[in-house]
Image (cartoon, rainbow, N blue to C red):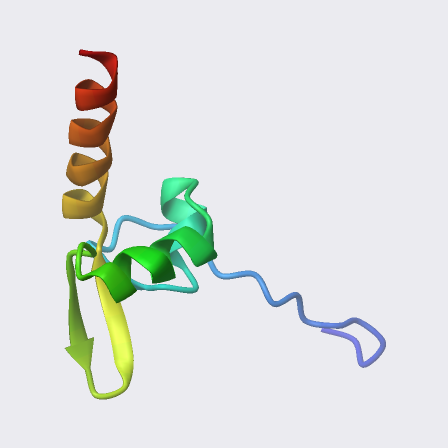
Length: 73
């Protein structure tokens, strides 16, 4: 990389089951603000690793699918 080129602050999207709240919007399409609201309400499937909150993306997607189904019915 040349000195004049800047590194892009883009995080790769992959299939990790646990991601940080900041990385979660790229994987789920939900806003970071909404994800943080779920955490405050105690509804976010996550674990704490020190000060870092790691979101279980598959469980979060299941939760969103359930909410969608309830809204339809």
